[in-house]
Image 1: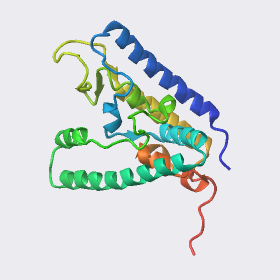
Image 2: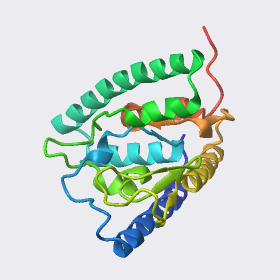
Image 3: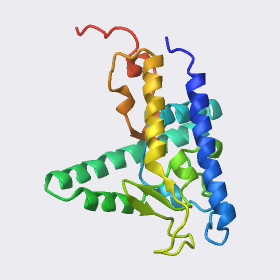
Length: 222
């Protein structure tokens, strides 16, 4: 049986609120540079993975918002198609790495991939906006990961200028800690469960049940 994970999800929400405050502070200080507006979906086509705790949180939010009905079916159908496409793209990137392409070059290639999020409706609005990932929440302001900076191409931040920056490595480290806490909370037999990262499409279609989480003894093979 899966235990109550509300305390861990509450800690995730606190981290998410911190990210929102960072975004709001930069937007307040540089209103002319942050061009995010309703209907803009540039960040909804970016390629990134979710930590275990964030994937499970969004999965739960999706189940609560769309327990049944045609809209749920349409979202899951889009998620399945997106995930198949992502599998092919990741396979190609893996082959490029094995062929000797540098990690930096592969990261640049991955950053150029544009894939529509299955949670976007026909008007380019997020169907799960209040529960959107942290990466989506900070997309419109300067960010950095692994020492490399990034800014939305539609923003007005000038290259070479100094701006407040959201360091995603720090956020990811804290998400990893929460994922470890989650693994301990469910008493998973999978010691590396917290290292599971999936795209949002996979988070929507996955069943985070006892079997997935490694709760209880492993089933004997027949």
